[in-house]
Every structure is written in structure tokens, then in C-alpha cells.
Amino acid sequence: MSGELGPVERFLRREKYFGVPRWVVGGVLVGVIASVALVRGQVTTTDRVRAAVEGFRHSSVYVEPGAPPTVNAEHVRRVLGDRPIVVAILNGEPMPPSGKSLVTAGLKLCDDLASLVPTNLVIVYGNEPGKGYNPAFCVGPRFNNEDHPVNASNFDFVLIAKAESAWKYRESPTDLTPQVEEYVLAYDAQAAKDYPDSVPRRGAVPDKLATGEIVLSLGGIVAACVALFFLLHLAARAVGRRGPRSRERLETEARLSRIGEYVLSADPQDANQAEVARQYVLALQGHESGANVRRQVDELERLVR
Image (cartoon, rainbow, N blue to C red):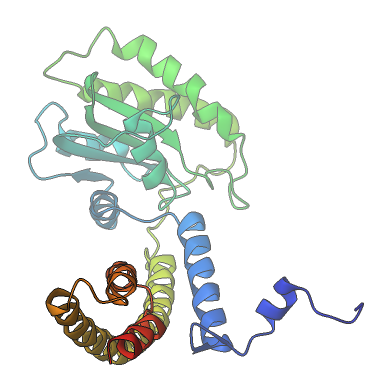
């Protein structure tokens, strides 16, 4: 008995599952697991982020169609020069929530942009749900890099606080441009301390934004093809099984119908009539519930001969 395989081992050693070769089932499972892992690990690029990053290829300022005139884009371009700062001026469409309680929608979008222009500081102007049209500031993940090593935290909250203390006296609801001006002045002051030899310039935008997405799409296509083959195979088997079953069911219904006619027309005083009627009712109930009543029907036909 010690050499007998358990139910789990017997299941795993099957050559086929649901009539499908084991390797196909395994391929489907691997494809699904790999696709889920890729989706979880891959940060997808939204159309809005993609458009902004493409705009940064040609200018330090991207203006989304329909953006309000509260930030003077041309003036901001002149102020920024070739500093490692990019600004996205979005329209009034509310930014989607981040899904995190401590991360605003603007900061989430800013981080998404910064991940694609990683050696730059990023400013995003957009409609924050419940807060109105405001800026969000963030630091690219590679702002501190081997070419220009620096303490990136010096250009984060500390820099924003210094700039805000100055712009609050100059900004207005219809003119937010002073925010960028004061931010640039604060950046210059900090850069003079942190970059005594060589101040960094604006980093280039990567040529290929969606390499990971292309890989993910190709993987998804392959997994979908395998899964489709698997489902079609199961459907074909189901249809193949359904044909004989349907014919058998129709045949059983016809036989039960003939027996029913006998039960209704037979002499009630017949000694076998009560037993035939009882078995007929049981067989009919079983047939309607989907059970195989072939043996009961055979017995009924024997009784009514």
C-alpha cells in the first residue's frame, strides 16, 4: 500500500485534463501567471502622460489642448532655458485619483511623468479633484545620477517651500506663472550650492517609451492564443458530447411517451397497472431532472408488453 499514489499525485500525473494534453494546460497556466506578473510589475503609460512626454522632446513646456491661460507657457519656456526642469500645463479635465490616501492626483501624474524623464524636475499644472487648478512638483528618480551626483532631497520639499514663500505674494487665481519663476530662482540658489563645478542640463526624453508595454502586449497575445485554443477545444468536446446525449434524450422521451399512452389507456383494474404507473412517474421525474433512466425505461417496457 505504501507504493500507491494519492489522489493529488494521480491527478498531476494525468496525460490529459478535460481531454486536453497536459502540456497545453500547463502552457495556459504559465501564460496566465506570466501575464499577471507582467501587469503587476509594468507601469503602463496613459495617453495623457505619453502626449506630455512626447511634447518634452521639443520643448521644456508641454501645453495640453484646452489648457487655461493661467500659466504663460512662452514666458515659462524662456525662464526655464535648458535647466533640468519640465512643465506640463494640462487642461481643466479632472486628473484621475491616485488610489492612495496620501498621494494626490497631481502628484501621481507628476511621478508618472518623472519616471519617463527621470533626470529632470517635473511640474504639473492640472485640475486636482476638490482642490482646483494647482501645481504638483516632483523629482525624477535619476535626478541624482553618476554624471551629476547630488542629494535629491534638497530639490524636493525644501525647494518647494522656499519658492512658495516667495510666490504667494505674487501669484493670483488668473496668473500662476510667478510660481514657476520663484521655483526656478530657488532651484538656481540650491544648484549653486550643490553643483559647484557643473550644473546639469535638461535630460533627453527616451526614444522608446513603451518597450515594456510592447513586451506585455506580445506576451498577452501569445497567452490569449493559447487560451483561445484551449477554450475552443473544450467547446468542441462539449458539442461532441452534447450530440449523442441529445439524441439519447430524445429517444428516451419518445419511449416514455409511448409508455405514458399505455398508462393512460390501460385497464385500471389490471394487477400491474399500479406498479407501472408508479415506476413511470419515477422514471419521468428522473428524466426531467437530467438523470439517466435508461434502465428504468427498459423495465417499464418489459412490464407493459
